Image (cartoon, each protein chain N blue to C red):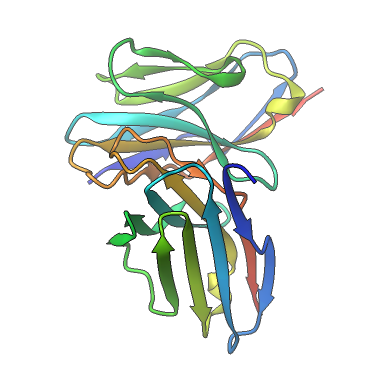
Length: 115
Length: 114
């Protein structure tokens, strides 16, 4: 069975500092990986996704993530964060055996950017 | 209206009430989803519909009853709920092509069961 672990429930960081949000997954087959962001009082919005090809994936708002198959990780990074990046971030996984587009989500990481 | 809309945005109900949540997508998608989001827990997939047919029921109690009359609309009918059912209920849609789909989410309905 698939699972996703987000290693940090909360990440406080100062504005303009770099940030990394960690995500590890467990699956016995090839996977597709996603990062979603949820701003306060809103639904989830796709930041980026890895399907195949280059292991470094660039997304919206200056975020990027690197797929590491040997470490089963898909960590999200941004070199310089802004106050507006304050939100909850969710890592999710889907696999080839899942015909219905079902996503398995991690428990989320709350990013808090302070001035 | 664009994207995925949900009504109402907030709902307070007693345990004996019957209410319904509505979701509408304006993206031409063929798959729709209901998720439950509780504090400090991963999103829980509840139901999936593909081309109006239910393809996933994730062991959801029968007090939650979904309905998908067409590819653009999805309802969640609620009756005799429990306080632990209080949560944010999110609707999402996708093209229905499969595992690489991006899911587009609505803003959610915040449900409080008294």
